[in-house]
Length: 278
Ligand SMILES: NC(=O)c1ccc[n+]([C@@H]2O[C@H](COP(=O)([O-])OP(=O)(O)OC[C@H]3O[C@@H](n4cnc5c(N)ncnc54)[C@H](OP(=O)(O)O)[C@@H]3O)[C@@H](O)[C@H]2O)c1
View (cartoon, helix red, strand yellow):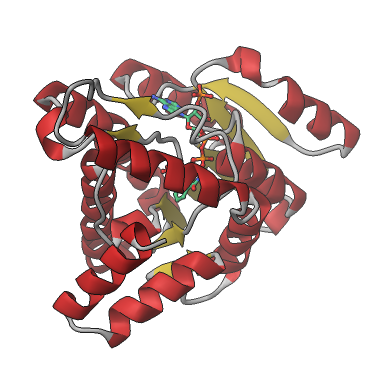
């Protein structure tokens, strides 16, 4: 089968990393299903598809809803007959320290960032198994490797995704299904515009949470472009034996290198210095 006939599905393609990845995969010759929960946000991707003659189909998919996942996968199966690449990208950030975040808010964060990934994998893996090939790309984050204050629900959802992906590599590789993790640092997307915040009025953690939000917003102005994440994904999926993890951005490389070199306690002190002394 030539690259021209291969099929990709990207979740959360309305903006940012998902948008750039859907376009980049289509430019590589994939018949790309750019999925989004609100298809009224598809104008830009439809325009670029038309302009550059790219095979992009926009489909509705709310990753939080089982019936939406079901009908999107059925649609792709009947229209394209296969799925070669699944990019689990949809997600959001919830800001709020542990004591300020309700169990319900934790669960909602996990629903979108973690359980939806399982939902997609369980629908797509049987298709890939039948083909004897496929690659699943899970968009994690540097926040899947390093904990810091202010976003514990987001960080734990990405840590969970890392564990899941490590297990998948052992279980699914013998079935022909490859799994990779993408670990971006701070990327300049709408994620900070779209972020959710818990109510931390009057909280002893108010000052800390606000400091983290403004620090990350400032970093995002200097953040890596989402196209760089898309390019990393395209490069990784072309490899015969893709690595477990791909880091994107100098900030992510710097933090992860420091984590590798330092003891846990030295690394914690380093993060405190980075967060609180600047
Ligand atoms: N930006 C960063 O610094 C950064 C760093 C590391 C990792 N990441 C990860 O990269 C991924 C993409 O984020 P981004 O930076 O590109 O942010 P973004 O521009 O806000 O894009 C997030 C995408 O996820 C979609 N989404 C959210 N909930 C959804 C749901 N229930 N069903 C379907 N789609 C849903 C959004 O759709 P709507 O337009 O409908 O809201 C949007 O398309 C996320 O998993 C994020 O954790 C981002």
